[in-house]
Image 1 (spheres, one colour):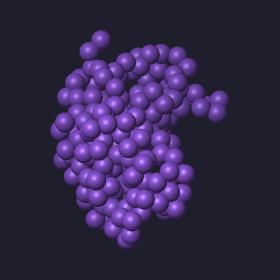
Image 2: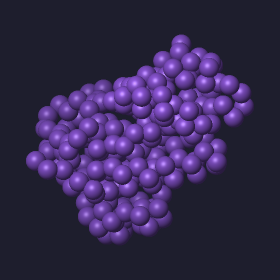
Image 3: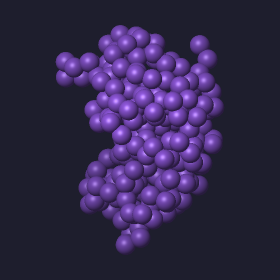
Image 4: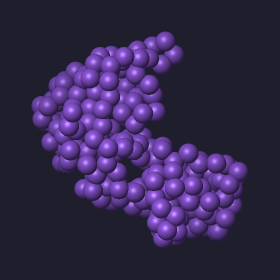
Length: 222
């Protein structure tokens, strides 16, 4: 089947159904926004598409390798930041030559060296914000077939957020299919034609953004 999506997928965590018989499909080149209240299952949906959470039943298919931005780089606290960049890039399928070429730019983008040579220090010496920025920088260095973006992963000061937002726009233009969890209704309205409203693990609406937002805002009492 073309595109990326789910067919009657149920995901259970801690004996609770987080996703319930979810069915959706996105075409290559399509940007789909997922919205919903806190705990509605949005992040679980992305993690299921990425293959990080198993489905109890149903099927998940993808036109290429799904990548959950900022999470798929599993970094090691005992190793220096620069070494983690290399390992993270290799894990995403880059060649050693690509890794060597991209490493300086990744470190510069992350900003971890703005107050000293932290790239040569073990990750365990980093603040949580520094580690999150490095994960984002690693994941954002690669073009993705299916890109999954959770805005809850955004971190850092205003300067880094501006850089990361610009990079996300670039990745969205380059990727085959994009799923975006967003909490900014103004941004959704200005950039996304299709939205999915997920509530209590069930898709309540799927269609043109303005129509879905009106239903969601009515539900939320806005």
